Length: 104
Image 1 (tube, one colour):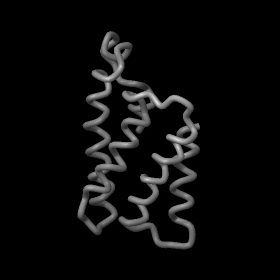
Image 2 (image 1 turned 180 degrees about the vertical axis):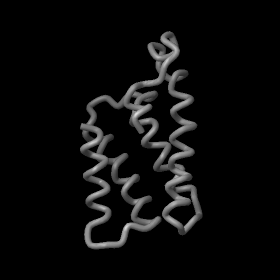
Image 3 (image 1 turned 45 degrees about the vertical axis):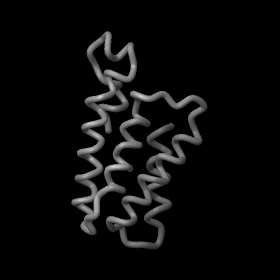
Image 4 (image 1 turned 180 degrees about the horizontal axis):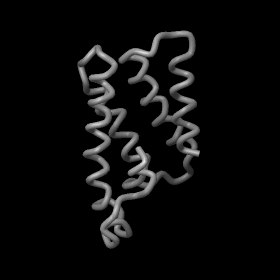
């Protein structure tokens, strides 16, 4: 379900336009909104946390190059992934990250 909302956001952002840095930022922001609205109880430490941080990283980037903005998003997502074990006790106890997070 989460992946479908992310793909929906990408599709909507890219409709009738060139996929550039601004389009990518918009797609990630929209994905966060769609996923937040689709989940009845979003839990921090899961894929939504990583997605939210990827969108924030892209938004903080001042780059105009798509690759640079995507790299900023990926770097922020990787940092968020590393913090997820501290956000959910089940993950902390098992010493793992959420499987959905790792797929990002």
